[in-house]
Length: 250
Image 1 (cartoon, rainbow, N blue to C red):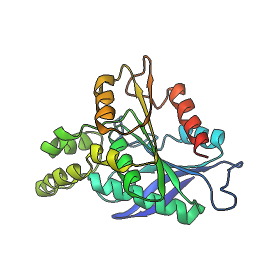
Image 2: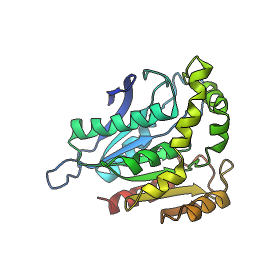
Image 3: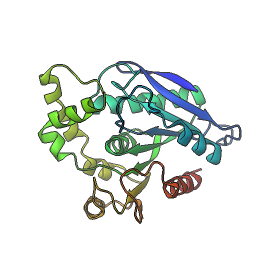
């Protein structure tokens, strides 16, 4: 079902699926997974399944967890405008919603593409997020930090609302510096971190991702899918790995 979550800039939309066999933490609340698919990949946004409902329903059904897919600020029916930190605040709001509405004791986050860096940031700093899965992650934000207009144009190209003042977009440089995935990797500590990546990813090469993980010095559970490209959402191998990771964190 679709839900509204009170965010920093107004209501943001979510899609919530609760399995009838939902597992509980010994009566202390349900297991909850929060998904952020990031920026839409198709235009026009209207009529597009931004929640990836079929994926959400399958994960909920096969895991027994509550699964919440989030559409962040500036996208379609969600209020406000995009900025990197606004989306991090949206994630924090969704965690609070899960804890209040579903009595979840803690949650796991899943981020795709650009949203992987946001989920890693929130998981490394938000106590109630006890782990994060990053799928086809984009961890190199240097180009966007140097020229935030590039990120604004990318967002606008898929129908995301951005600030109208250039001065507000320029502030994203500080936000992206704060989001530095290398710093988040240092702070993730003992929390569970899953990385799923395609060997044939045309956006982030396997070599670049491996270098990032090596330099960060953090032991993430990393899986590279042979012949996998950037769009892994429909790859059944990715779903199997994600479900296995959830089961181990049950």
